[in-house]
Length: 160
Image (cartoon, rainbow, N blue to C red; front, side, top):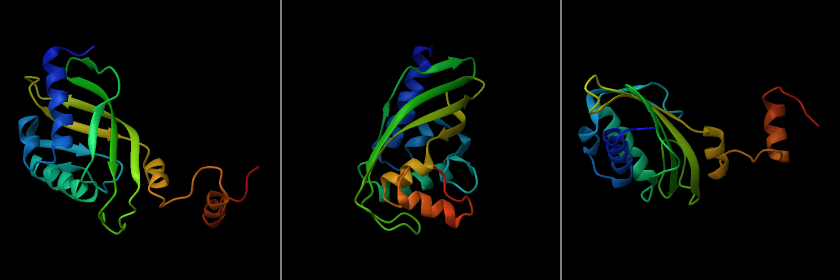
């Protein structure tokens, strides 16, 4: 179970994502924060890079918000924080045009704290990238003909 200070820190992390305000990660992250998530090609280094990433996501999902999904678990300098991400894709994101669809999915943040346990030093977000693409209508749903056709194109053949 997480302490009150860690709960406050993770609440601040979620508020930074949900608040859509540039620079808000500086209050909860170390200046040299290391951040990874499934849509990034490479990890981000530094709070400025994280702020830039967040701004691109906020532009595409202007109503995006993170909500606590379950109990946060902490052990010394590490925290596992489950959350739910919800947002509507109303603007293009990279090469993906706006779909107007809602994404609603669980996310798990695995965090390492600074030595004094006051800020986030490393954060790794885990979520179902394929599931998000399904919700946006970019990839076919599991079990559909479209999925089977996609698997055949990738060389996997048909399955019963």
